Image 1 (cartoon, rainbow, N blue to C red):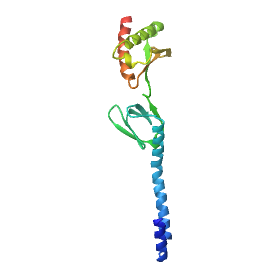
Image 2: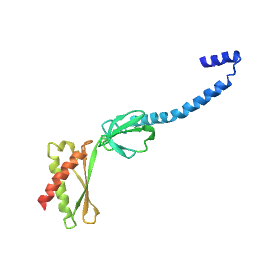
Image 3: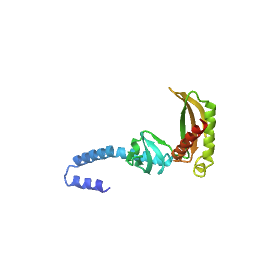
Image 4: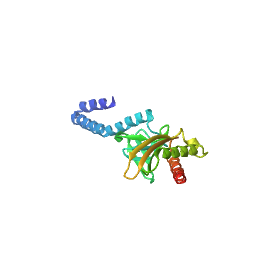
Length: 192
């Protein structure tokens, strides 16, 4: 209202207001184009938060870069990778996001053994090591269910690959995986 009143007063004083109105239109257009990206960031961030796609403390891969999510805001997501590098992504420019720790996590094993080995015996050893690991105080509470053994997954140049998976609490898959592999190595040595 004040702007309209100012324009009317200037017109009554004999000042041509057409260039002022045209300048305001161009300024509004420039601000609109500049704000377009900001608005896209806020809308994307709003839906990301509303849908609970990722939250602080999760481990996620955003546009191909993985790390621990340090902050999720309306405008940006902040990740810190394993080397400590901080990555900031504008929400409007995120093409893909993969949350590796939502509700539960899993460690997938591709265990290669020589062709001469009895595959069924190898899978029994793998299952026994899983059972032993679930019985420990340290790792048992972190494992959600018994190991899934999918069986022979591939034939390599010098090995048969057996695939398995252990479901864990979020972010525990790496610690459980390292402990499982260590115990499996000793169990394989013991079984010959």
